[in-house]
Image 1 (spheres, rainbow, N blue to C red):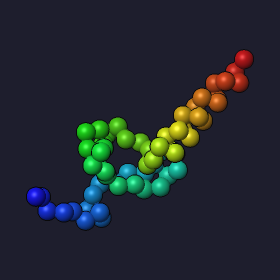
Image 2 (image 1 turned 90 degrees about the vertical axis):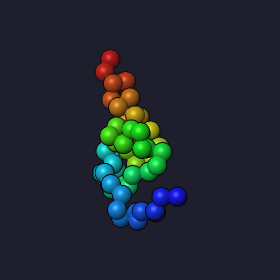
Image 3 (image 1 turned 90 degrees about the horizontal axis):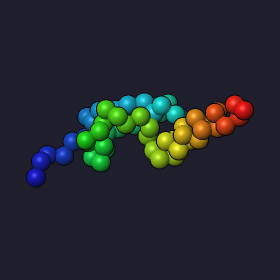
Image 4 (image 1 turned 180 degrees about the vertical axis):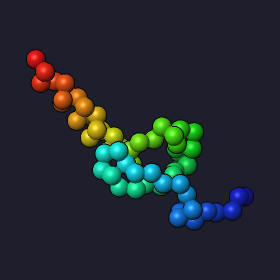
Length: 58
């Protein structure tokens, strides 16, 4: 079994939606470079914001 790492030793990023820092998670190991949001809530909020901007363009 590999040695455990401290959470402070893991890489971090800033969330594109809320701006808060978040740490690497095991489920993001394959696509860490593509991860932009800290949670599903922020990801959905960003998608809703993009979607509502083009809806009123008529």
